[in-house]
Length: 317
Image (cartoon, rainbow, N blue to C red; front, side, top):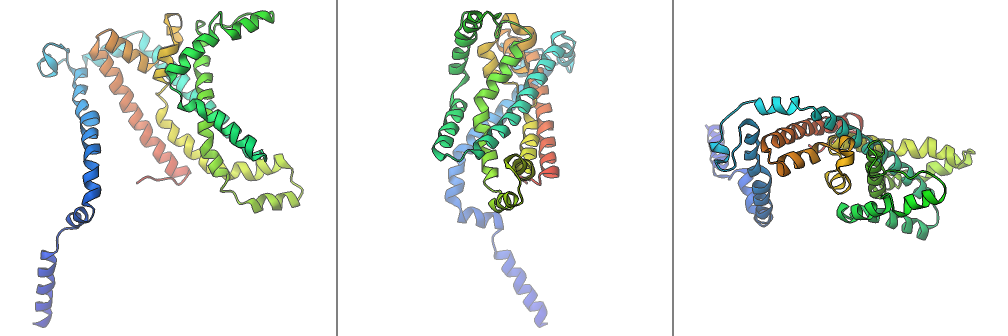
């Protein structure tokens, strides 16, 4: 009888206890109140526009709106894949994006190793500052600068001509233009990308270098046997996380640098969506291409997080 009464009392006490989520809200109500503006922005700027995905499945009429446009099913998808330039644009996107990711990471790692070996602190900080600064400049500013430098009458080609060499069509030659995009993007971002590798280098135990030096290992041997293995998990992690950007070839950069002469090798998914969807008023095809890019990007992001957890023991959930 006593145990029954005690159990009943416990049940009554639990029934009177408010749920955990209600207690958390009451305890942290100021923080939740501060989240309201961000939540509203997220809803109206990220979730509400998802209604526009329906344009991919209708014969869109701007005057009738999405709800009043006739439904066509997957006809727009068939039309998008049957266009002759679709495969070319996809190939351009993959080539430019992958080369940016690969070269960007390789050069960032090499630069971080070089900076780490510098013992003159003032010089090291100056180099880091100068190489990181371009990352914070917009492509609108850098685009005008590169157009001036790399044009046929710019200082670079003028110097080549003065040396008796043939000028290079950085912005007008179809074979050279993709590499212009890749190398200028790497130049802009490698300094900032090296920061995380420099942070990883500082976590290596300095006693390992001292022990290796005592055993007669030179600088190159210490770098090969200690430094690179020490930051290899970070390199693998960044490579896995960058996989989600495999279809992001750089819209702003290409938009300010490309021209009709290099459209065959410089046109990517983002510029194609902008040109055909907004400038050409073909909203259906632009939405189809954008939707497919988003779906593939989402799958690649999930894959990248799986690879990061599998090979670098990195998890966000």
